[in-house]
Image (tube, rainbow, N blue to C red; front, side, top):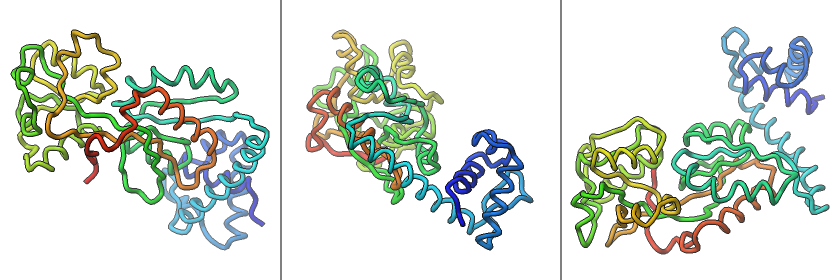
Length: 314
C-alpha cells in the first residue's frame, strides 16, 4: 500500500538528487528513507530511481510517478486549507519567486502591507530569473511567481494582474528627448543599453524590434547585469538610453521623469501575472496576493486595452 510518507520521500529525492540530502530535508535517517522508497518500488514493481548515476535521477516511469505524487500531496494539503478557509483563517506559508526587473519596483509598494495585513502568513520571497521560477513551480519548491506573461506552458496557470508600459529612459542630452514623436524604429541603434541573456525584459525588447521588422543585430550593446537600475545609472553617466518598465516612474522625482519618454504611435506593454502550477493548493493566499497587488499599482495599469502586450518567448 502506498503511503503519503513514501510519496514525500520520492519527491524529496527528486528535488535533492541525493538520498542523504533528501533524508535531512524530511528529518529522517537515510536508511529509513531508502528502505521506504525500496519498499514502494517493490510494491509497485518498478524502479523509481537510477541509483547507478550521480546525482541520482528518476527513471522514465519514476518521473511519471513523482509528478503524480506531487499532485496527490498537493491535494492532501488542500484539505487543511479548505478547513482554514471555512474558519476564515488566513494562515500558512507562501513561497514567492519574482523576476529581477519587477522586484525593485513592485515589492516595496506592496510586500510590507501584505505581511502586516496577514500576520499569520509566513511569506518567503526570492528574486529569481524566469526559467528558475518555472522550474521551481513545477517542482513545488515555490507556490507562486510574479512574472511577465504570456508564457504558454500547459502546466502553469497565468493570472494577469496589471499591464505596464515599456518606456524609454535617456541621458538628459540625448537626441531622443528632443523628438516630438517616438517610434519603435528609434531604438534600433548601438546607443541602447540592454540586460544580458536570461532576462525576459531583454527578450521583450528584441521581440518588439522584430515585430516591426527591425533586426536585433543592430542592438549590440549588452551589459551582463540583473539590474535595470544599474543600466539607468550608466545612462546618466555615459550617455545613450535604455528601456524601463512603467513602475520605475514611482521612484523618480520630477527632474528624473524629464528623461523618460513613451512611444507615441505604439504603446508596448508588459503583462505582469501571478503564476502557479496547475496542481497548486494555496488558493486563498494566491487570491489575496493578486488582489493586493492590483490595489497598489496605479489604476491605469489595470487596463490591457491601452496598448499591445509584447511577448518575450518565441
